[in-house]
Amino acid sequence: MKFAVAKDGKVAIEEMETPALSEGDILIRMRACGICGSDLEKVYGSYGMASKRIGHEIAGEIIETKSDKFAVGDKVFAHHHVPCYNCYYCNHGDYVLCTEYQKSNVEPCGLAEYIRVPAWNVSKGGVIKIDIGYEEAALAEPLACCIKTIDKLGKIETAAVIGAGPAGLMNALLLQTSGAEVFLIDTNDFRLDFAQKYDMLGINAKDDVAGIVKDATDARGVDATIVATGNLKALKLSLQLIRKGGKIMLFGVPAKGAMLNLDANYLFSNEIQLMTSSYCSELETNAALKMIEDKKIDVESLITHRLPLEKVAEAFELAHHGEGMKVVVVG
Image 1 (spheres, rainbow, N blue to C red):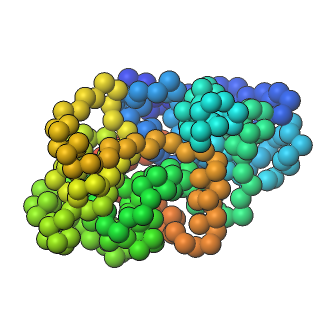
Image 2 (image 1 turned 60 degrees about the horizontal axis):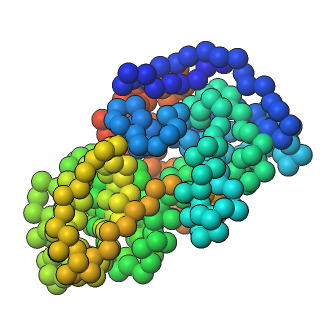
């Protein structure tokens, strides 16, 4: 079987034996797997987490099972990481910080013809039956990460989302759905133009962003900014946009070792909260799937490119250079 690997700043296809199942495992035929910003960081940047496997927005069909919870032919979404739900972190709701969360994974990765989901993931709720399309289901994972982010922010009336990529636009759509006024900021004209079909106010970062935002908010600034890019210049821009008492959410994946140089006195004096939100658990994924099923968020409209596994290198280049919106590998 074929699967994708990251090697020397590129993506290649390799061959391996189809994984054999142990008790409780399932084997999925990959039908759709989105390319995430963290995947791009693993290939082109300096990813700071342990796993370097690429592809985790996984939807597919079960073709073999050794679990009595699932049957051959079931359509499912599969999580790559699953927490234990019983440790200190899990008991405090910090599921993605669970030690077992990063240890767990699928084999060999999400960008493969066939994917073994281990019994641990299956037993901990990491596999979810779906009644929607495979591509929609794959996008439930990034939407779930955004749901977690918006939940952390709480009540927001005005927000700036810096980074108009797929995840940035999903965050903006969730905020818009909640009734918030959203300013979407990027340097990529294609993505700003793409966002117009959602009635989203796009601002080119080369323009006077702070002036535009302040004029629209009675010189106050926004309640929250979401930095949906790993470029830390966006974090500095946030300080020009945020109101007193506002919240800055670091959502995009910074490179390992990336350092901040911020005016700590300004943060302190204005009681500005600096927050982070990284990954999600199946709790948010279930909420995301429900939103998609109920047609509250049209994630499928974000997909601009669908490529087969054999063209995964091309898919990564498209995503890396921002030549579209969401890129999905299909099988």
